[in-house]
Length: 127
Length: 458
Image (cartoon, rainbow over all chains, first blue to last red; front, side):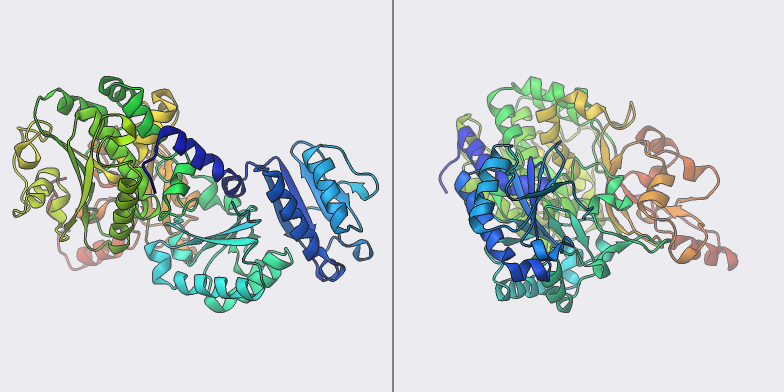
């Protein structure tokens, strides 16, 4: 590695910002993908992959993705819960890969709830 | 940059490594590979987490779910349930000693909740072997400030105003020590770091060196600039192989990136730092003995004055600070003296790292504000006496055999000013081996007078 300058120090910090958002917990938005057996069977893995892909493409460093168990509405899987800081959580149902991509752009980045997939505002308590 | 949705912070401090943390890590990477999660989940080996008696330890970020006492064979179920299905596994969580209820999140466990991390702020947060992790947590920003924006006088003033005292035990004001040395004119001066932690049961300094080696280097660069040092040495005992390895790695990385060596950050200031291995003589923790040992001579203390700030290593002006003192310096430079004084007492500012050992429920490494009642340390953080036994006494610091009973003393405050008068045993920070009382009682029963061990020089 070459000799670092002050601006290099700042760049390195920027580069790893999303990692440390994850570790320190200072995130703006959290997307929880429900991954019970029902969710996995309905294709939740592809939802996670599409979501990670969108986050990577957008370059956003203040969004985290977690998984949780079955949300209880097995017939409506795959489901995700989107939590934007200081806003109530929103649950989405019956998602497709394109659907999660749209939700990511409209809701997670843009702050606008996507009505056609929205199920309810609110969430069960998870860890 | 690859994005991961989860980071598994696996403790790889000496304690956890000794109870198979590396096998747990291997099992984790195997299992994650099997489940094809390697692009989503990252495993990070960190320094000492602090909850040593409960190792091997892992925390899962982003949610901070804390797992303890892991075995390699436990890993498949955690990977499947938690990482794949999002259901944290209660079986491996911490349980309240009395109610036995599981506490999933690390920050909800009283042992962690009541701590304030400054010297240990990067523990469990970074990979100590990766300089970019350290830089991402504002690493080397304080050095940049001290080298490029502040004059040595300004740096010394900030450190003086912060009120920080040496964390090695004697409690001498750090800023004052730097000021004495900075005023001496000499062609060469030395900045030394005392990593010769010798008190039985204590591992505050080892943990810092293992978990965050770059913070020690950064503290030394700032101090070196302030006093005008030309060379630095870290004196560390050879019994700390992991600390030595990580320090050496950190030095190599810092040199490679120009954060050590010639003309650091184009400031015109140059400093080289070397590790010197001590052979483990307790007396070499005393500063003048340490310097003799570093010179290759028999480690014997010499009378002062002249003080090391005037005549130290090879009779040149020298400042020696403890590992934990250096670990506090970058934060003081970045956040200011007032910030540092917000915690602690008027005469003992900031926080202090302690090691809890003995018959307590929670054993390990903690950092708390100065002035915290010993009772809080023992009962809230330490979780009280193990196996429902009655409290008998607490011993502070190694062989001086000072015991503190239930009446009066236990309510005393960890306050350096008072420590010097009443509680010398708590100075270095390793609070509490309750078992010591038994030895004391045995001695009494045999009609022997309980004799304190010889007074150490520190």
